[in-house]
Amino acid sequence: MSEKRDTRRAVLTGGAVLLGAAVVGGAAEGTAEAANGGALLIGRANAGSAETKLSNASTVPGLSVTSTNAAGGARAASLIAKGGYGAYIESTSNHAASIWAKHKDKWGIFSVNGATTRGTGGAFRADGRQNQGLFATTANKTTTAITARNTGAGAGYVTASAINGTAGPTADADLKTAITNYWAGAGSFAGANGVLGVATESSGYAVVGVATKPNAVGLKGIATSPAVIGLSVSGRSDLGGDARVFGTLSKTAGSFKIDHPLDPANKYLSHSFVESPDMMNVYNGNVIADAKGEATVELADWFEALNRDFRYQLTPIGGAAPDLHIKREVEKGRFSIAGAKPGQKLSWQLTGIRQDAYAEAHRIPVEEVKSAQEKGKYVFPKGFGKPNSASVAAHR
Image (cartoon, rainbow, N blue to C red; front, side):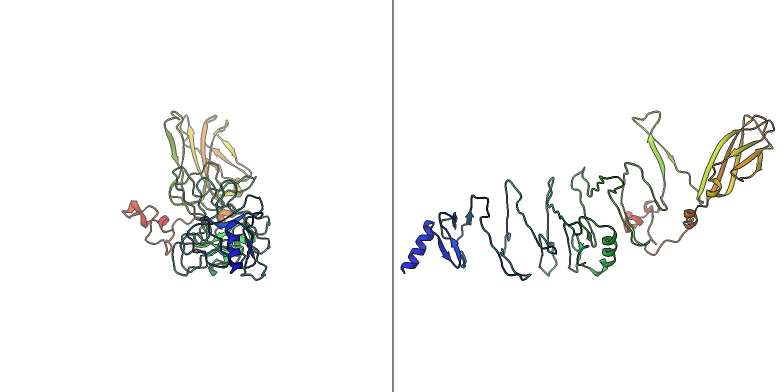
């Protein structure tokens, strides 16, 4: 009885007491007690309603727990909550938490939502407005800073599979190989939506890609087969710079739109593109006929390598020239005109059909049948009295 009384007295007065191989209290070590003054209990449930605190004024850890078991499932500490947070960590002047993993094949944070029924909860969520919700870094160039994996069968708000680890859905296998072999990155995600960005401010950007080095690319979309679309944009798009298309460009209409030369501050001026069912190039110019009423037009040295099926238009200027004609067609980089008046100015136009390697391999079909997925859909549904939901873009 005397021993129990001495133990209780030591706990309440700050003396050091050994409970289950843990030392509690002691003036030299700091304090360990419930906020209401009750004793901190180790090895038993603390039924007190007040917050239990460990306070420490030193720079060394206030509490250090070490597990010496080398098994993968061993835990140094386990924090479990039935209703609130399992752990709440806050710092007013530094990082809230610093987590280190010193094993080359292990994660700094391994987060799991173990619920088997479908809901809105995920494994990890980071919230931040002007500041980062999550900042991750890795010193090993062959590993990623963040690896995300969704192993559930149902679609989530954002589903992501580990590109550098075990893939979730087996359908990601080909994409996993294609990306990891050629496009290593700090973070890689694949799934129904690899990355979902939502701009909640009127002047915000859902996704921002920034290139800071020469020849770097701010945003890249890859199509792994002809049936896949590398980049799809619904609605208006603005490109603030030069654009190159390494392929065939298809459009419903086109024009240049510039500041109006006569009123640039208040008006625009637009001209539509010149269209043709052929892959046609157009060339023109003016020439002065010699004393015989003839003229020769010199062409670029690449002209005949690029073009075939030539067509000609001639217009005399300043007077009629009934006998105006093409004397000699394009040959060896030139063609000749005859039948004009001596010294007469002539206007000419010459067209040719592209015959370069790319054009020969990618002829544009003038008419084509819509695919099974696009039948019943329209490029411009409103023009046929159809709703916007019937558009090809909405289907995609």
